[in-house]
Amino acid sequence: MEDQLLWRLMTGETVSGMQMSEEAGLTRAAIWKQVQKLREAGFGIESRGRQGYRLVSCPDSLRAPVIAKGLDTQWAGRRIAYYEEVDSTNRVARRMAAEGAPEGTLVVADAQSEGRGRRGRSWMSRRGEGIAMSLVLRPCVHPSQVAMLSLQTAVAVALGVEEATGLQAGIKWPNDVVVGGKKICGMLLEMTGDEQMVREVIAGIGINVHEREFPEEFAKTASSLDLQTGRTLRRADVVRAVLRGVERARELERRDELMRVYREHSVTLGSRVRVISPGETFEGEAQDLTQGGGLKVRTDDGACREVLAGDVSVRGIMGYV
Ligand code: BTN
Image (cartoon, rainbow, N blue to C red; front, side, top):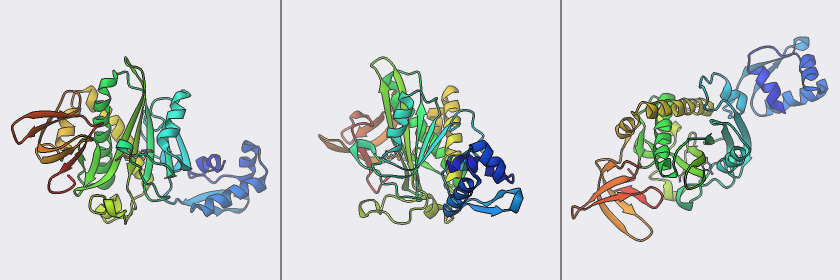
């Protein structure tokens, strides 16, 4: 409800309480209550007597009007659903997609209670620290091409992170984005459709922004954008940059340049890796990508093996990348 008021305040105008109450069909006291709620959430709102209210400062917020301000994309994030807390933004996006949400619809949350990661792991999203976002994509592709879409999303986020931070971002196959050799973003792509055609893909993206501490198991491998830049970033700026990245990556794909950009960002290709799958573990050199987005690994006995993202964990021999 406060969002209607926030959309108006974000224009920078002084918003009359009287006019707002007429537009929203609420009493002026109800509008005042909404102003108070926004103030409690950190929005600096000046009361200018009879003239009304004016926004003078904006906190680090992921609310839809804050992300939308200055967003210059054509389709990515043109519709935004913000939640203070959800179980999983992927789950919400999936529901919205089933109800017909258009391509590019963004679901974003300040916290997730059941965030999901790849290979059945969970993903922690603590309130106000990182970004949990999911995009509804409607590619007209065969299910076998979804792995490529996952590489495309990795390029999108890497480009977005570079734009938002000015730092170089790398991609650890298939789609972890790393900065300074540490993971700052993970992705989970989930599709619906049949054997012939993908109906919709939910691209879930989790980005560490303000986190300073990580659970022990990730302490050596994870980092955040604040830690890597030495600055305190605004999460809405990062989301906008990623949404631009999503459109840039789609354009690269259209021009047949996506794999070149992926390879340029890859921190996996050319390095020695350990491949851990449910049945076996082996080591070798990550040599190239396959047509379908898999990883070609040359093992020490000279054999060439193709590794698919769904089944395995690929770790560098010397460290995480
Ligand atoms: C991984 O590295 O294992 C992937 C993590 C993906 C997490 C994101 S956060 C937003 C979206 N919602 C989820 O439940 N998961 C993804």
